[in-house]
Image (cartoon, rainbow, N blue to C red):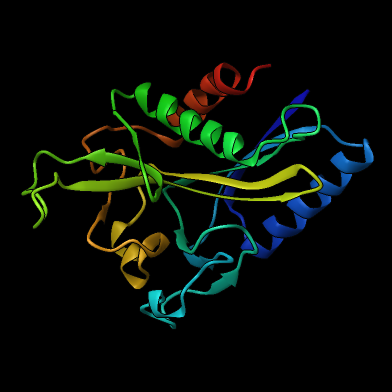
Length: 216
């Protein structure tokens, strides 16, 4: 069974790390079920294991935490739905690449519930949307914005961390970092795209599409 937990209010990042560590230990011992945890954080930046110090543009704006997940710098804050996934790949499939692909597919199918076409991009982690309403990039390629980030950590084939989807965060807060180390691209949200979605709407979509992607 996969347990679903939705936290009200803002969850402090250290508290989230401690809870995920405890859940992963419980899954490994066989004492706890897998879990998907939906929450929001107060404004903060996290540094993944590949983070480049030069991508932290403002050291004083928000707290910065070492996340010990894959990836680079990312932002979390109110209006962003974070979904932490503690899943046992021992009972699923021991394939990290496929697992990340499934997380991307989960985001893409969730966005489809709102009529938004999310896409993968080679060499650029996360999920992206094309912005035909904006001028193309200098190389002639279409303007694109990132709408969801993905970062994972795996211990003895049990996963933690996960995804974050921008529902209605303050997009200006992303200006303190180079998100995921990727320049020349912007960041967007469902509300920024003209989709008046609530956090509850996104939670329902996440739960609906989860079983379609990962199975029951």
